[in-house]
Length: 261
Image (cartoon, rainbow, N blue to C red; front, side, top):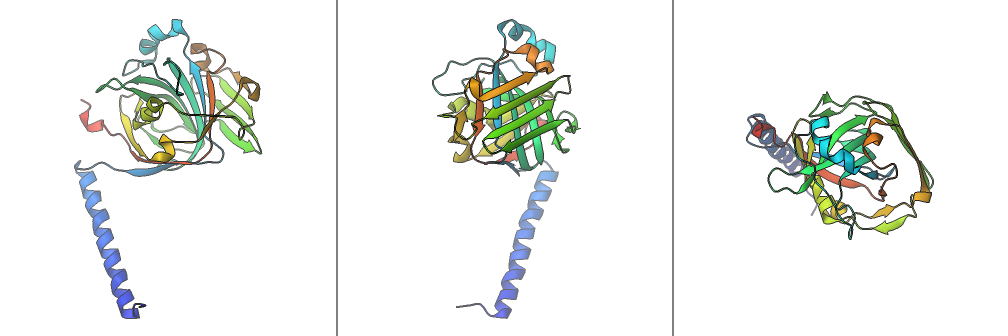
């Protein structure tokens, strides 16, 4: 039976009162350190999120922690199922909405989780075409960056704050070979560290755990990498991986801030 106008007014009032009180409770719990914030973070499907995974050159591994001032030891990681773990530097370009917005680029290493030695992301440089909060500079600097798809091709570039420019043209982005991400690469997203030692905690569903991804062949992309980071890695990436779908996270930023002395 359809509610009467009076009943509808009552229900609307209860809805507004009840849920505003819940949000108000969360506000005070977070303000006084009794709860942690949780905010949406969506990696959009278009243009697709792309990972360029470069193996770190063996002679660079030993001194890299000291040279970059890493807060945690480097970790080897297995990126695709059936592979051997290696030391990687990865560049990810994507469009995001939610906690941050716009096109972002992140260069990341993988480090040992201080609690269980599992590999975790460590962002060593981030740039965006819009300002966003991060734990290193408080606001991510707006940089020179582009990531645009046209049909089955993708044009990407980003200028590193440490110097130099990475450029890549990808073809056949919708027809690359289907592959499966290794579980430890997916789980590396659980905690994303920054050079400060602060980490963000992420929560995700099967859209991330069982994401549909494609690997491009060497003939399907062309890279010109004059960035600072190119001096640390093999010139040809071990993988160029394209995500087919959007991925939705819930993120708790600066998760371990209260534990750092």
